[in-house]
Structure formats: structure tokens, C-alpha cells
Image (cartoon, rainbow, N blue to C red; front, side, top):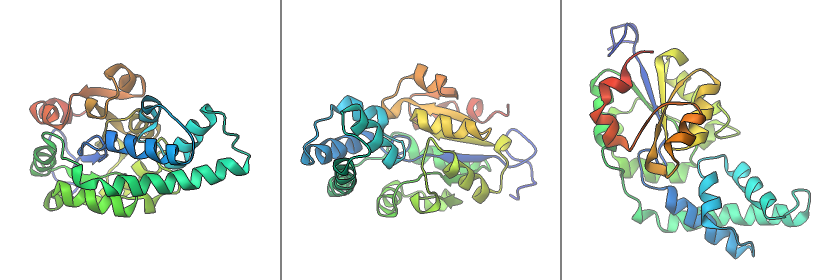
Length: 237
């Protein structure tokens, strides 16, 4: 199907832009644990719930928010030392337990259904390349994916809209013809900044009210729930 041929629900082809962590793969809490241990190794105790609240945000902004909340002066040498060590520790911890990651219910079915219905499918993430490679192998949906973004494509991740814009550009689709699927408030904020409709998922542990307040037009339990309500989700605004 070309971009000008009829797509599902309208006259132009729609793009479905998918965050991965917490949206397609059950990886939010492994990220929380990886950060928790990384900060602890730096001598900073941060409760898991506080870390969870920041997951999905640009890594440097996550570190800034958490260290500032725990009295580490951003202008100090200690801050930069902890920031560097914690970021590196998080990556090491996360990758070391990557074999425990699991695909969320309905994730593959959703990607396949979107492709079969004529949507342009983009994996719209700012994950580092090494993490992204693991996630893509786990998902095993390459035959239905048209484009992918990574952390190498942007200087700042969500809630900055850059990664969503890159995904749109690669899809060759306007904001009005795209939907961003994500489990975090940062996904909704990034999408709505540039006029992309946001659909939230509860699979990352953030509540429906918060996702809606952040800009999500609809909220579903997980990818399987979206499959069950696919026509409703894909309907044009």
C-alpha cells in the first residue's frame, strides 16, 4: 500500500509509533532495579518508587531529578561523578539481566495487526543501541516494522518531542495521521507537543488518570487490550 492509497479509517496511510520499554516489553521494573542498584553503588539511597516515577524520561533528566531531590548539588563535582557512575552502572545492571525480559501480552499480535491493516509501523524509542538490539530480538517483529529510532537519533529523549518527530519523518506521515503508543507520561507529553495523538498503556505502572492528564486520548491495559479494541483505537479523529 502506498502512502496515498486508502488506509484503515481514512484516505491516507496512518502511522503507529510504538515506544518499546513498558509498552511492548515488560522492562520498566528491570530498569527500576538497575537504577536502584546503580545509585546504591554510588552511595545514594533512592526509593524504588521515586525511580519508577522517572522511568521513560531522558537518562540525564532522570538522574538530575533524582539526585536533586536527594540533596546532591548539580553544580558540585560529586554530582557529575555520581551521574556518570550511576548511568554506567544502570546500563551494566540492566544488560546483565536482559535474559529475564519478557514481551508483554499481545505485543506481537498488535504489531502484526497494525501492519496487516495498512499502518506504517515505527518503533519510536530513544533506547541505547545495545539495549535496542536486545529488545528487537526479543520482540521478533521485524517483518512488520517499517522504521526504527534509537538514542543515536536524538540529543534529548522524551519528554522532548525529538524522537517522535524523527519517527514521523521516517514514517513519511503527518502528525495528524499518527498515533503514539506509550506507557509513560513522558510519551504522551512528547507526542502532544507536536500534535500527535497519544494512546496510553497501564503496562508500565502509571495510572490512567496521570496518563490522561499528560495528554493521552485513550488508555488501555496492555497491547492485548488494544488488539481487542483496535477499530476504536485506529478511528480517525
